[in-house]
Length: 415
Image (cartoon, rainbow, N blue to C red; front, side):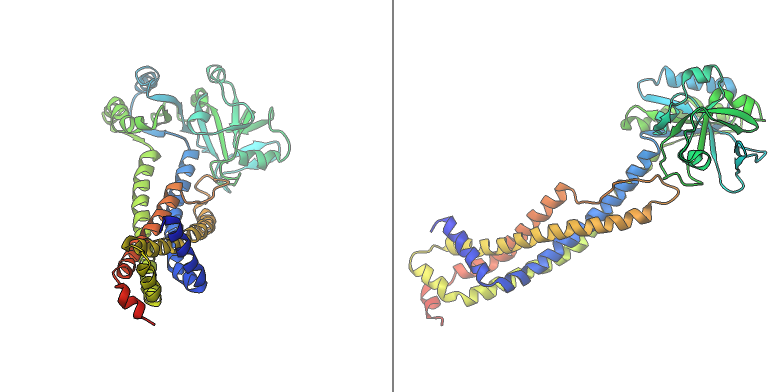
């Protein structure tokens, strides 16, 4: 008997017992769906967090220091441009402007005061948008010419645009910051849906205006945002190259130096998430084992019911491997169909759980990620299908072997 006949007989047997076959699949369906939904949701959480941190700046390194002299920081900037040019894609100061007088941002008769909400005001250079992954939606970014000429221009965030201008174009309009007039040259696209008290409520000015804007001239507190050329360079920059150059200069004057990247924390978080996904998938796999035991039980019942049929097949020339093949194929088909249905159900559950996670993890402190859907990876789908097929074969092996060991004479006597 060839394999095609064996497969046809296996399918015929399954179709003759539809309800029993569906109930047998149920354990596999639940197991596969649970594994996919749990693992995909955990991996989706990790992906969402990664996208949120990338929205804050790809390969971003935040540097802060205090205590070093002005010429030390000038040397540091030159060091970034020359010796580290192959590892640093771009950099920008990010010194915060503090509105000590609480005058707020003024546009004509309107005022956005820090008493009601907080506006993030920074001094940056022409690369500020690149290092912080801010995209210009209207107008242009600060240029090198603006910095060199100390032009009183600024780029505003989406919240400022909504608050003061609504549907009107803000380009060319004048706002007052610290009592001084600034022309709006651009608007950064919102990352937080334009909400108050988020980084969308921001203003960036040329860094060369710091000394004239800040009442405390000669301040030694410095902040920079650096974009590493490659993700692989981040660890070396934060742990070795940057501290070796600046840490001693700051600490010699009783200060400090810090170079930190969210990417390093994200790698640790993803490692922990992968371990959690593995454990969650392992726990959910217990139901798969229960489904496999169910397949073995039903196949044993099937062998008992079809003992006479097995005897007839053996009497007319069926070999031991034909009998084993028939029952193994039946077990594998039941398990594979259950796996396919479980995969489809798992994808739906993943999408539902993903929307729930999206609502919980997107808060005012993290950028909004749009069009995010949790779906299992191809590797997870293929792995779940192959595991369900293997489970059917393993748990079908004993019933198949028992059927093949029946003696034809004894089997034919069975009523």
